[in-house]
Image (cartoon, rainbow, N blue to C red):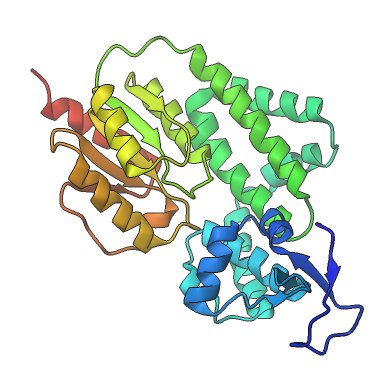
Length: 315
């Protein structure tokens, strides 16, 4: 964890032993960005940070625990506004129920994966990921291994069975191996040209890589522009690069209202000939729709949409 600090403020009669974490440490420990922490504080009244002698936000360990639990539940589809009403014990019960259902079919994968990560040996992690990718092939690696592995690792991190650096090591090795695998694919021979990115403040890029892999396997021209692009930048790049489709990914932690606003602005700035697609768990619970914008909630439906686009645009 980050270095805790002692509270010294007239607004709180705190024990000198009360341990508090600054916002940068909370971001690192929970995976919730500083921007989201402040937004939730304003919108939901949680978390409720105290202030240190310099007036900076500091958080109790109990709040950090709740935030970690919320982050895991958000990752599997719950909305922040629903979760803030629950105390730690109820959040733990909800997560345990979800984890039990998901892991019932994957005990061997969970045991094997966590055993490798606990070796703290980057070479062993790299060899394990390379073995799975070679054994399964890129398509099955993404669909049958990676989606489950991410959930297992996230839950283990939440239970305190893995550290943040072990999660980051796995992610880095997966991205390296997948990039190498994509580079070995033949050059795409047919449209559509698909631009992949995330909006500002969205730091989760693994979904982009998973989509890029599958679209390249389907012989589509998929181009990842990385994370955190404003809608004006996206529109300019799409026009200059003659993209047929712009696909934006939103994780569950991204505010759905901001996602809708972003997609509306992007749709306004692009010609109708360029399709706008939104995907990721951040859009899973919304009932909103946007004219001339398509929403996707899983990888197979996106691949089917590419096939439909080709059928529609056959000359």
